[in-house]
Length: 113
Length: 112
Image (cartoon, rainbow over all chains, first blue to last red; front, side, top):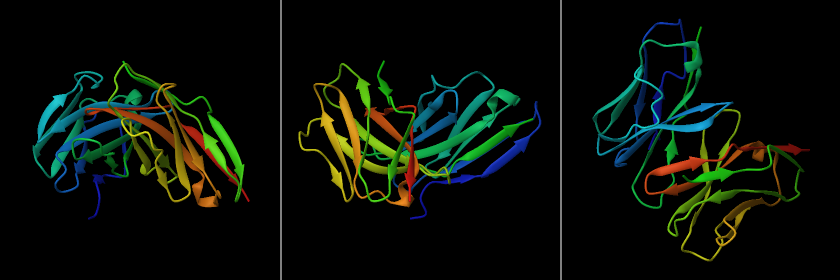
């Protein structure tokens, strides 16, 4: 298994532009999570899906952020319009339900200038 | 809300020695799971060890073991025979249902 695959690994964009981050979870995992990591706030859960359905998006910072999971093998996190304060590492993770840890992707480092 | 506290922002250990990283958490639940993750400079989050709250026996994975004190809400990680490759950020995490919360992390340096 190739693990959780995220793309791109790095993204540099100008303020106001739309940014789309992509994630392919591990086949068979029925939960998918999006986290954001910053020095100031650490790891924050943004949203998670169960069987492709968004369950809890209370961590999404504002309406500029949106996430979709059109099928079991693909999810996107979109920021429109992007702002410099969105600069962070964004992680996707997937898991089975129950007592299991999450498997993380390698993250996308987003820089908004 | 559940919170996870790692009181040691940085720790260092001599190669081949043992080091213990501390973690405490706050919860009113009795059924939950605890984890330690390692994040090396590559930034990949790697699961190190897992503990179910209903199990009294402390989890062990090779050189990594935990000291789980449920009443004290404490979950420390012991690394034995430290290796240079153990240098990383270590995050303690609490999971109940599908809500996993992370501590702020401890940066571990391994001195040759």
